[in-house]
Length: 361
Image (cartoon, rainbow, N blue to C red):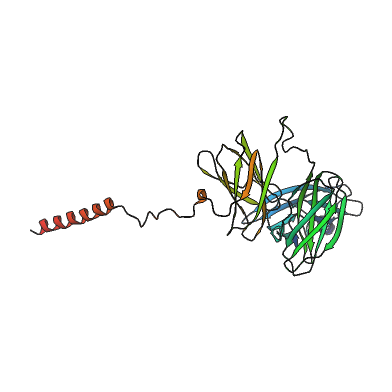
């Protein structure tokens, strides 16, 4: 009898010890790409106990994106932060693998949404230092509802905002911000629905070179701009200076696709960067003009694109579609036949008819 009692007490004690360890995590249901994904949690483990927190992308199967280690604090909490800047939109989950039992909540699902294409800048993302930075653009919000702008300087300090700036009936806005140093500035945009996205604006000195790793003198950079969409791309004509390769780059506020014809007459397509970096093309030019076609990767974008060219005599927007980007489709090989092929078919039919006639005789 005593053995049975002791066995029962042991089972109760074991069950109590197993269920004593609990882990619960908390994360937002929806988050805009670019914002930090903050995962908070509580656990009944001892202070300083390490816990793995894993971020997975869920498509058809779960793919591990990043794993971080959190440590239990004195108040039984832990916290990790995942960077979502370069993640595509979609369904993700954060999880503490092999957590406690009972009523533990060790997994949360998070939906990342991408709103970056709701904002477009018409001001250049690279500006020569003049004591001011210009931010002009358009945001897809209700008419005259305004947009909140915040700008962080090269030293990670806030130099503007957060401040609401008025928008016109088309969602357009413009603001001029005093700046005192060169470098990269991050401008972030928020509307009534929350965070939209950010853009990097570079302020450079008048004599700053594009390729500082070389000792050669960098020539003047010329540029032109035009509005572009997938249905109506922008076309540019670049006249090389004739004494070396031409370096061509786009503005960086949109994910642009560049098409051009190389020295061998082959059509090339370049889309190596995202919306935060310019597309850069180096073409060996001579006295003949170079033609470029630029359009956004996303169908929903209709924005102004700047095309910059170094070692060129001129850059201008083409008023018509250059002939190198011919719009006539290739012949349909399934419906077009040559006269020779047609005569061969008639001969084959006649031969078959003659054979049948001879068999009947």
